[in-house]
Image 1 (cartoon, rainbow over the protein chains, first blue to last red):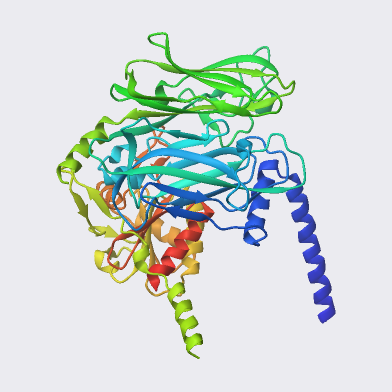
Image 2: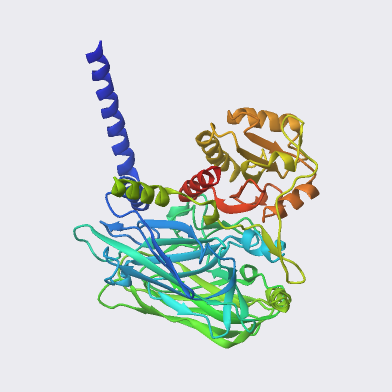
Length: 382
Length: 196
């Protein structure tokens, strides 16, 4: 009897293992990376701990180890995420002023190529943040992304005197992902180090609010992967139809992550609705997110037919990757108006001879008049 | 022997999780710019059994709270699964409760909430499904530092996937996006800290 139970148990385990194996093999590169990272960390096969240090002017987060064992295009690689606070032991008002991400060796000292950084996103919890300042109508209005760093634009600072005000024990959220466009060798391990700089409260500081604007292109929801045709030349070929798909007011499906074919191409997208300007204000900082083979991303005032900023992407010539992406930073700022229309214009040049993927976003920082009024009242009580 | 006592002291000292490690997050900045601390309170809420739910029921309990509605097609079903998991993890803790507030009292009647509660398999006393007027629920959401509103197409509501952790003194000690597995782990760790 016992041997029968043992026999069936072994057979059942074998069946589960085979089915599990088939399921795993059918997964996309991205989902395989999620499974592998989870297993590595759960079983402690690689360092699964975060090394977080905070002082008076910076919080530094070094991630658990992430294993690179394959080519990982954008959004495909191993990733880790966690919530954090600048300093949980205090509830002081501070100003976030700078961001930096870099790839490190597992000894947490030696810096590696930033080619291994797909993106590092920093989000805030809009409920906690806005409710604290009695700005409840802003909760849920927009995805609460504070900013993002990515390959080619790994560090930046706001112009002097500007920042994003938070309380030091406020919940922030970090998500960082591996990129590997070129290296096909034995598996190797990488960590990311993310440094967020902040200043103690100073009544002369001016608050910024973050808005994310990005290019989206329509696709045929019935045949999403059949691509542009002669009858529908403006449709894009989405990379996937889940995480970066949106539906506009006309019911049209749009993708923010699409295929670029070999050769040159120009895309434009009206971002007036994404900006949600309620009043005229000044724009002081733009961090751009682009993929390899992008050349420029322009922020344009359509109403005035004028280009306000061109972010230039410098591509490597000997490998796939972005060497540098320029960003906008200005103490004086550029005026934006609620009755103007704005657009992003993206120029790409896919020189690889094969299809590549593309995203084009700008993290736009505007002077936050409403928050400034709240801060004036706060300062009067100091 | 002394050395052993010393190491034992070190071990106990290092393993002790202090509730002070969790910040108190229930404060706002008033219109006049003053920092105002507050504690969570309840008025005019009824649970799935038709009984009144009051502030008194929070006292000496560790609770977690969220906002939902039973016809929610988007984030509520996965949130519910995670909350069932949390409820099962702490099912033997006398002083732990979950509070879910419906944001759709028009459709979520007491009998509907009761059936919804039964389907979770969690005892009523461990998971309170609360109902009040929309206006009162909005005030409650404000206490929990969130809000909700109908989507423009009327098919769904915007509401947050965060849950708030409340201590024995009705102070908010943490916020957690329950749809992210790492956040659920952190939530469970922080509940354990407060239960000690």
